[in-house]
Amino acid sequence: GQNIDQPTEMTATEGAIVQINCTYQTSGFNGLFWYQQHAGEAPTFLSYNVLDGLEEKGRFSSFLSRSKGYSYLLLKELQMKDSASYLCAVRPFGTDKLIFGTGTRLQVFP
Amino acid sequence: EAGVTQSPTHLIKTRGQQATLRCSPISGHTSVYWYQQALGLGLQFLLWYDEGEERNRGNFPPRFSGRQFPNYSSELNVNALELEDSALYLCASSLASLEDIQYFGAGTRLSVL
View 1 (cartoon, rainbow over the protein chains, first blue to last red):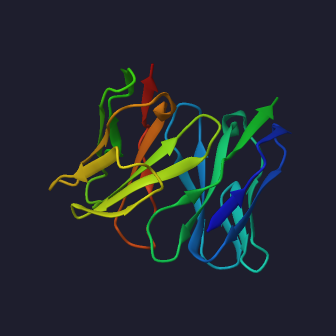
View 2: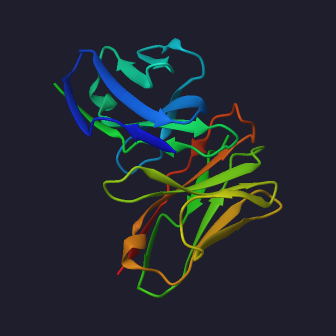
View 3: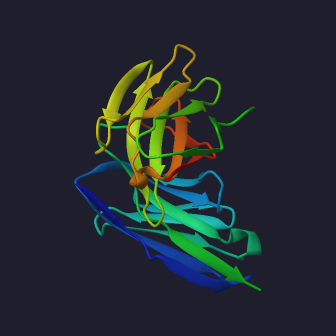
C-alpha cells in the first residue's frame, strides 16, 4: 500500500525560501507529482520526478530520493500569491491513478 | 484551449437523493479520473475511465458509479446520498499515457443536508 505524509501547515515570509517535505511508504511508483491548489480552485500541476535528483522550474524545484522515500518542493523568492496548499502524490506501478498526501497549507506573510 | 470543465459548480442535495456530476476533459484527452476531496482529507481516488471503459476504482461503495461517453466526457453518479458524501469532487484528464500529467477541473462542491 501507499502512505504519504506532509506537514499540515507552514508559514513563511515574502522573499524567503521554504521547503515542503513529503515522505512516503509505497511498494513502488512510476513518478512523484507536486500540485498547487488555491482555496476553491483546481489543483494545478507543478512538477513531476521520475528519477532521483532535483528538477528545477523557475522559482520552484522538486527533489526525489527513492532510496530514502523522500521528496521536497522548494519555493524561492516567495510571493504572497504562493499562499496555497501544496499536494504531493505518487502514481503506483501499473495504474494511472494518483495517491495524494493530505497537502501542506502554506501561508506567506509580508 | 479550454481546460477541464465541471458542472455544476455547487450542488445541494438531501440524504437519500441521487447526484449527477459532469466533466468535460481537455480536447484530445481520452482518460478521465474522479477524486473526492473531503474537508481535512487529501484527494481520494474514486474512478478512472479510458476509452469508455472503467479501468480502476478506489475504495468506495458501489453507490458511487459513473460512465464515459464517446466524446470522452464523463458523469459521476452518487446514489442514496449520505451526509459524509459532502465534499469537493474533482475531475482530471490526461492523454492516457503512464508518463502523462493529470490536469484538474475546479470541481463540484456537493453538500448533503
